[in-house]
Length: 147
Image 1: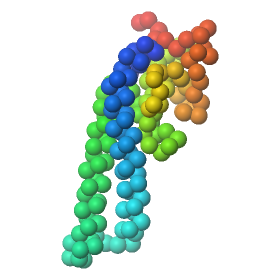
Image 2: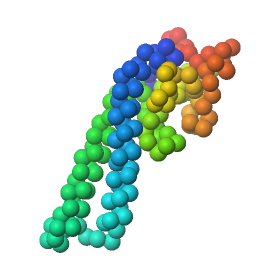
Image 3: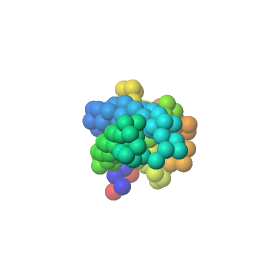
Image 4: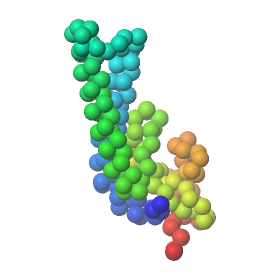
């Protein structure tokens, strides 16, 4: 697992920001589309022999699958960079965690779409609600331990 310094995480933000922007928009659309599809298809068997309505539902289901595949591609792009995309309070995937090290333990540097730079961190088990400002830890900053 790659461990990021604050500087490395910030240096990756132009690419991470572009991917996360697409990811947030698409994840929001997929979530809404899935809810709509679930409500209109509840209790129905989808068959092309069942008429135009079922054909529309099958088309909608195929489009939903296509969007989910694209969503997974974007998630994989971030993971390939060493970052971990997360679902934020808005319900969209608009958070990115960067593994880092503090006091000889792994923590996450935390960035949210719309922020200019990485300025927060949290423990592995606390998530977004446990975010702390990096400026609060000046005496013991989050940095990689030299190998």
